[in-house]
Amino acid sequence: MKRLFKTCTFILFSVCTIFVMGSCDSNKGKVKELTEQFVVFYNDGDKASVYDIFPSIKTYENLHMEGSLDSGDDIVVEKDDSTGNYIATINEQKQQRLVFAVDSVGSIQMVDAFGVFHLDSISNELALKTGVPMKKLSDVTIAQLMNPESDFINDIKCMNNNTNLWANSGAYSWGRNSSGYYTSMNFTVTNMSSQTISGKDYFLVVSPKQVSTGAIYNSKTIDGVDLAPNEVREFNVVEPSLYRIASDRDLAYSVEVKYRTESILSFLLNYGKFNGNEYNDYMLHPYRSKVKNSGVFGVVNAEKKGVAYAYKDKSDTSTVVDTLYHGKPISLVWESEKWASIYDNDYQLIGYMQSKDIDVSNSIPSLDLAEMNLISPNGKVNVYDDSDNAPADKVVKTVSVGKALLEFQEWGNVILYERQPNGSMKKIGRVNQENIDYDEE
View 1: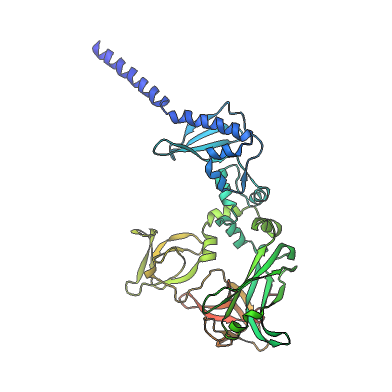
View 2: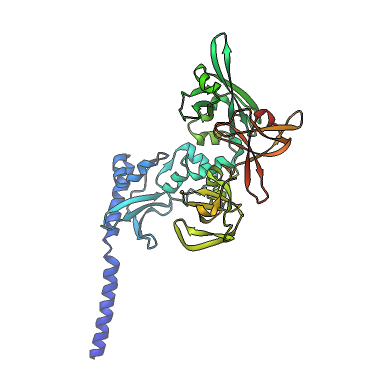
């Protein structure tokens, strides 16, 4: 009888324990109360109070409050054991949910939402056209994706040929006429896309500088012009005050394309062509724009050992993910002075390598090279020294016309590269605009 009593007591105690454990999560009650308050503030259009509950939402300028939420009578709060966050479901059918985090001292803070906040019309349209799964992603994730500076938007810009305006600068002259001394900066803008781009949608900013000192001079703004597909238009900016540094061959200048539309997103909508798979493609190649914009080519430098190693994490040499032989070409992005991330031909991250194991002496500043035809009436093209203090007319090599790998640099120079036997790229020098066939199909 005693054994039976003990058994019954144990079962009763266990049931009570389960009941207490299941009902002692006071955070659920607090989250539900905060959710009820949030719904009231949202429906009243009380942004200040909404921001008090969800402070970080203020940083996402492309999100806004719209319409109203359900009354909140059927709010269900669950804890996500994988993250420790609490999920408050306002309307299951509309998939409207709030996400709350609890810190170490028990403070509760709203950190995300699903189906509650809305993108501005331009961001929303671009998201739909590029296949962003709006109903599956959180509001914050969507806002981050559609930020004009995000990797996703950069990837779209890199891969969408219908938004490419190339501003190629570098040439200038100087002299004296009836008005006095002058400097003339001559450059071209090329529409690399397949459709006409209106001059009303962009303008050009010309920014001169002195090479030897790095001194920046006042920039000049030029209105855009209509450009047909593959059309090249020449521009000329005259500035008398630059005569001295120009005559000393100490002048450089950049030409930047600026968009008059509301944002780059507007420009993408006006001139981009999309297939609806851009988001999925980006998820398969999340580092593509990073490598294209910041990457360089190099080779593995391991002459003594014969091999070098790629590691799982930067600053951590405990986990090797790949072994690379000496001289192997690699694509990389510098993460610090001592570490670089390296990528395969499909822009997938391989791992991280130490700078001592990388040779970039013949590297290129960008992986985004264009293969274009060099042209010349005599069949030969001069390549000029591109170093800072070299005379502008110093020829370093003469090459034959035909296919060439060219890079269009930020400061407007067009640089010729040649592939080496080990697969790395060697910078040769600068070529003139008139030797490039922009009308090539």
